[in-house]
Every structure is written in structure tokens, then in C-alpha cells.
Length: 284
Image (cartoon, rainbow, N blue to C red; front, side):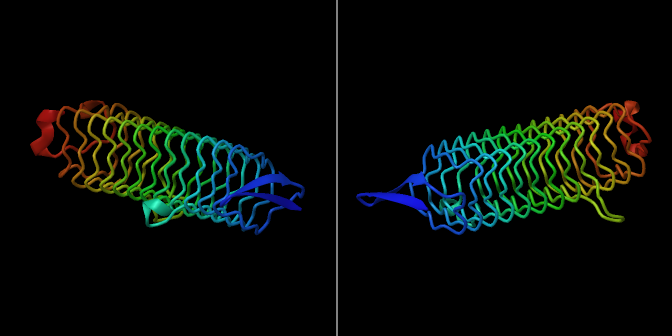
């Protein structure tokens, strides 16, 4: 049984006397600081609901609608948000998830377009096939996430921690990864003849040391001042990209065409399998 208390025009969830809220209509309610640990909220409607500081640890929010919901400083660790809808094409209709704990959460197939995750902890979470176009992850912790076949197109990942992240077969076109930590990241493919796409992405001053980047498409991508030491770039397509003032020590450029790449102030003599065009020999 769900008990709802009405105070003026505001609905407040006073007590929960059932193990499930499956399919419940809780839109526009004040659930601030509510204890919903392990609650079944699958298919629930939580549009424009105030869930700030709520405890949703281990909650089941599969296919829940959270459009416009306030989820600041929420504990969503180990929660199931697969197929949940938090994003929209309009900023006013998207959920806000600032400084929240989503560690080890399941967000597979989640719709997260334009959602603001600034300063949140999503480490060890599963984001495979999630739509994160134009989402904001500024200074968020995404270390060791699994996000295969996901869309990060236009996402703001500036200064985010993505070390050891599994981003195989992702689309990162136009994403901002300036000063992000992508050490040991995997951007390769799980499939034969496939690749991740990071065209026009900004990796300026990012840490890509030991990154797996074989066969990627990185056309007109910015690697200025980035750390590419010991990165594996075999067969990568980096046409028109900028790799200036970068650390490429130990990086493997086997079968990489560098004719149109800007290489100024990067010491490619310390890189592996580099075929430098004659007109660029003086920068070596």
C-alpha cells in the first residue's frame, strides 16, 4: 500500500507499506530524502519529481520515466536504470543528476540525451547502447565503465575520469574530452572490420597513455598536448588531425597515414612504426 499525503497543491509520499511501486504514477511529487532502497519502481512515472538526496540504492527503475526529475546528490548505486528515460531534446525536460552516486548502476539502453551528470560517480556502471548525445559529464567519474555501442556524440566529458573504460564501438564525434583521463581506455571493436568513431572530438591535454585505439576513425580530431604514450594506433585513420606538442613515446603508428596530420613539436622519433612523409622529416 502506498500512502500519499496532500498538502495544498503538493503531493508528498509519506510512507511506503509495500515492496513494489511498479508502474506507480509519482510525477511531480516531493520525494526529497525518501528512502527507496531496493524498491521496485520499474515502469514508474517520476516525471518532474523531486528526488534530491533520496536513497535509491539497488532500486529497480527499469523502463521508468524520469523526465525533468531532480536527482541531485542521489544514491543510485547498483540501481537498475536499463531502458529508463531521463533525456529529451529539450533541456527543460531532461533530468538533472548532479553530484550523485551511480556507481555500478545498470544504464543499458538508457535514454540520456542532454542529461547533466556533472561531478557524479558512474564508475563501474554499465552504459552499453545508451544514448548520451550532448550529455554533460564534466569532472564525473566514469572509470572502468562498460559502454559498448553507445552514443557520446557532442557529449561534454571535459576533465572526466575514464581510465580503463571499455568504449568499444562507441561514437564520440564532436565530444569534448579536454583534460580527460583516458589512460588504458579501450576504443577498439568487438567485431571484425568495425571501429569506434571519434571524428572531430577534442582530446586536447587528455591522457590517452596505453589506450587501445586500433582501427579507430579520428578524422580532424584534436590531440594537441595530449599524452599518447604507448597508445596502440595500428591502422587508425587520423586524416587531418592535430597531434602537436603531444607525447607519442612508445605509441604504435603502424599503417597510419600521417601525410595530412599536424605533427609540430611532437617527438615522433620515440614512437613505433612511424612512416613520416619526407616533407615532415624535420619535425622528428
